[in-house]
Length: 423
Image 1 (cartoon, helix red, strand yellow):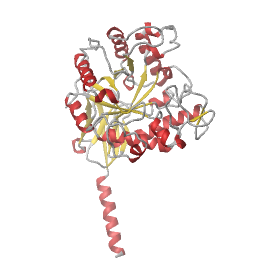
Image 2: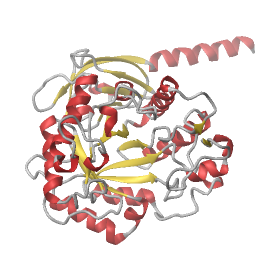
Image 3: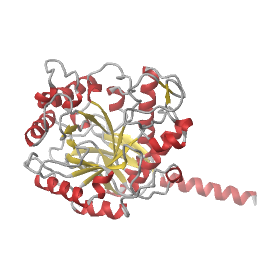
Image 4: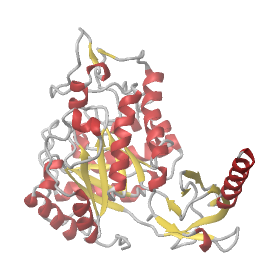
């Protein structure tokens, strides 16, 4: 019997050694054949990045090699398609140009169809959809007991998320799942031991009277990563993490001492853990950050530093709303009068500080009424200025934010610079 077990074990080891193989290749731009540095190549749960010459070597097992890079379409191919160690794999350039819809926006036929009309009129190609919104609700049924237990599933607005995703993809849309992470009222209410604490005791509440969860808690990380994996499984092309930060309130308490280093390590650590967990899905992974993070040397007191952030995810999406720049930027103290400069100079600042490719940035732009400087609405003209700035910089697209889900009905997009999605 012992001998039989040894034989079985040996056979298993032999099979594993046959299945696990090394693959090599070079990833290039399909249009100009320039090598793509930093492209992600995955096989099963293994992932590597291409070097400065676009070259990769990956050892593992799985049915398909999967490739992605900011500013390009994702691609899959069978390992057998690699003819030799010097095989070239081309990726098609692709810029994401999208609008945001809340959980109510995607569920409302009126708001959804209006947004789709705006996308079509401006030849845009993406929707950012709340999978877990600002109030912690997940608008469709998921198999996650904790979400059910804390009440995150008590409002189901989308009856069949897979059908919804399929319908939107049939329209040629790239779909981004927005997940609000550490601002989570239902989770903090149900698990007060995981919540951010107030200075005078009890659970902290922000200006909207909403509770937050502690970014140091592994249980909070696990919950949000589980939601991200579900979003990838139902067909979203990208997972975008928002509110990946500490509250901007200094009188709060946590399970560990909070200082610049520990805050930064917690936020970056969460993103790195989520990135690793999402490797098998070949989805793009993005992080939303404050616009001033591109300028500030410290962590803006919330755990966000641009250099570690840009190295933790595929894409960084700074919120470059002129209305949010309450102090302006050097030489431009009234940001709503200078939307082009705010967007362009902030992105340039980020590139200078990180040395990252412009393709690693896809900014959030303003499509809502100014609330800070008496600057009025941000409609077609100002939207176009922001687009021009993002494109001049070379960003891998842009996204417009309007929390009311209402966008201008005129033309504002660049109608001559759009790359079509593949089927």
